Image (cartoon, rainbow, N blue to C red):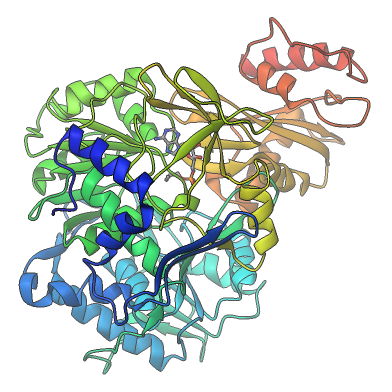
Length: 635
Ligand code: WT7
């Protein structure tokens, strides 16, 4: 029987089977892969410790299931179609056989440079095929990759290197991003001044930017790979050996390293990719995310390559050299499934239909979105003008921690509703609980989104700090994995994600902890205290609004707010830069000293009619003063 759901009744049937007998359900899918040794038990788990193990004692190498398995059957099929930042630069097409050779050569290179099973390797690279090669080569030799989005600052990079005690960094001389060239190697050099564990740096030449190579530590990619051709033996990995660490923000100040393991992640990304997008052999799949995020891991690299798909990897940005670029790429490479973020859709929608006009877009069959709730207007624009009314939209809800898509339509099969992620994939058991942790059964309910049964793609721990994993995800509601999202289940049983219920904001589909931004702001020597909240933003979904108590000294307010923005930029990166900074005389605190963020959130969104109960405020007058100041900021 096929692993691909074909009909709506087929979906309900599979779903039911997956709940009645999860082990049999997942075993059937896992059995389609090549294992060096079959598992003894499908799943072993409890959400108290938590302990989650899938395919216990199974041995495998995920890269054999991505590359070796297609060598003889589909070696000449294109694996990667690389579209450069500059449309006049040549496209690169890499077949499965070529990718196999590149990965093997780089695996040998890593080994020759002292990297082996269990070592951590940081990848800080542009969207080029070598970035994919670096990730897959790590997986082949059992090294644990941690990709850091190349827009993060040297401080943020150093924190991540230190947290996982990485041995190697793989980077480039520079990155092309739209009209800009970013000197990436310099950022890494700066980061390495604050770290002690890195022994080697491999540097890909991409922009020709001048760099300083440190003798004995830094090696050019093209020199490093010389003489390392030939097959690299794929390390035998336990199903529960770590595959990668990916850092993500939470409600505390420090990003955490989400850990994914080998066997379960493989099974889950493959299964979800195949079904959600209804991928069929020969299709061209394009996910426009960066490999620095989980979407890039699961739906550019692992899921699609496990399925033998041809993927588009795009180096550039949606608006360069013009806002028709996405559509040009779709036509040029005859993309069948296109997966992007609501923020990109809204940004392009702002240019109207004109940029779309020169393009046919008739290869498109499925459109997807991810990262944040999609507003109805953007949904309709995407559906009508990009999909020409013919392509189902899959609004896919998931998280860095979930490894793959959990709630989503099955393309063309599940009837869609704008702004609804619709129904859980087979194997996923969502529950809605109230603030006391009581499960709300039936339809037409709203509350906190939890999952009550494990699935193979879920996180196993947070690197180096299991207690934190337990506290963050398994302690809020007893016996459940808590997502941090609010959700509604409507009268049809469809799920609509309402956004975060914790102190996390979602800026252009990227998760930001308010505490993390506050910590960065507080680094400015004139800042006394700050409180950060999200507010509705037309393009980004949410913008960052910072209320700051500061000692102006001899600065103007304008100068100080600019300095604060630059500080955040330097400490975290441009994605965390506050959109608005308001200098305030005080913050609305309760008598016990807790900031009432609810009030700040209302002021930031311009919704100041009713603040609810403010009787516990220490100094109610401060609210009026903040409101006055907020009006000035908006002008
Ligand atoms: C948070 C996870 C999953 C990859 C990209 C983001 C929000 C994600 C949706 C969606 C509404 C969504 C949630 C979630 N989110 N997808 N389709 N509809 N909200 O990964 O950085 O781990 O963020 O993004 O709030 O918790 P992430």
